[in-house]
Image 1 (tube, rainbow, N blue to C red):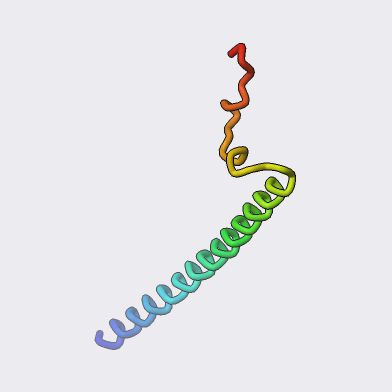
Image 2 (cartoon, one colour):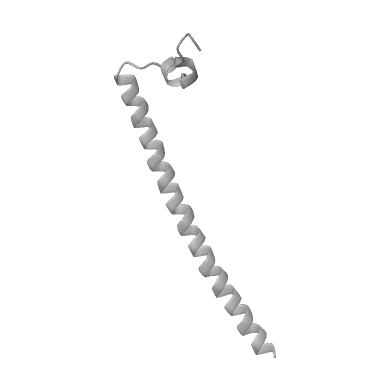
Length: 70
C-alpha cells in the first residue's frame, strides 16, 4: 500500500511538471507576441510622425473628423 501511494505521488508530480512546462511555453510565446506588437506599434508611431503627424493627431478619433453638418 505504501508503495502504491509513492507511485501515485510520482505520477502526479510528473503530470504537474509536464503541465507546468506547457504553461511556460504558452507564456513565453505570448511574451514574444507582445514584444512584436509593441515593436510594430512603435514603428507605426514613428511612421506617423515622419509623415507629418503630431502627438495631437495621434490622439484624434473618427468622431473628431465628423463633418460640421452632423
